[in-house]
Length: 196
Image 1: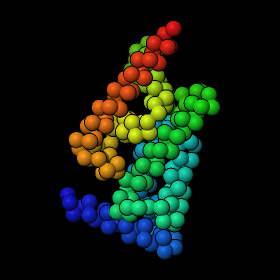
Image 2: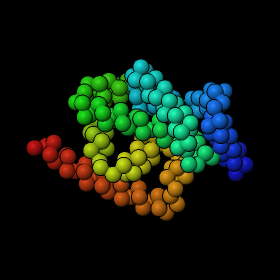
Image 3: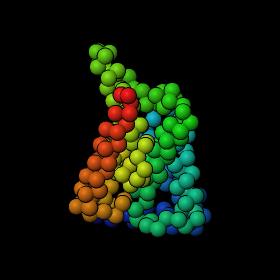
Image 4: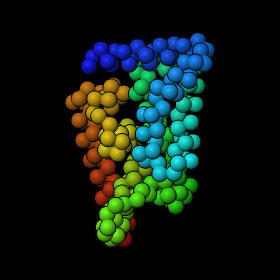
C-alpha cells in the first residue's frame, strides 16, 4: 500500500515537473490520468450534463494554469489538488446559483430520478436535501463547508481529507465535530425562520 502511494506521488511530481517545463504531452497525460475521478466528483453532484462538462473542462484549465505558473507547492499531492479544484468548482457553482436566485437551475442540476414509488416520501426527502444544501451554502467557514461536503456528500475517505488539509486523525475529528455543531445551529436557526 505504501509503495502505491509513493508511486502515485512520484507520478504527480513528474507530471508537474514536465508541465512546468512546457511539455504538452504531460498535460494530455494529466487529463487522461485524472479524467475519470474528476467526472465522478462533478457528476455525483451536478445532474446537468452540459454544466458538468463545463466544470470538468474548467477543472483542468485551472490545474494546468496553476502548474504552469508554479503555484503547486506540493507536486507529490497532485491527486488531492486536482480533486480539490473539482470539488471547489462544484461548491462555487451552487453558491453562484443560489446568489443569482436561479433556484430552478439548481433544482434541475440536482434532481435525480427517485425509484421510490411513494411520491409524498420522495417530495419530503427532496425538500430535506434542498434545505440541507441551502444551510451548507449559508455557512461562513470555508473549512467547515469543505469538510462537511467532502466527508458526507462526496463520501471521501477520512485519510484522504486529512492528507489534503494537513490534519491528523484527531484534528479531523475535532474539526468535523465543530463543523457539525455549527451546521446544526445554523440548520435550527434557518428552520425556525422558515417556519415563521
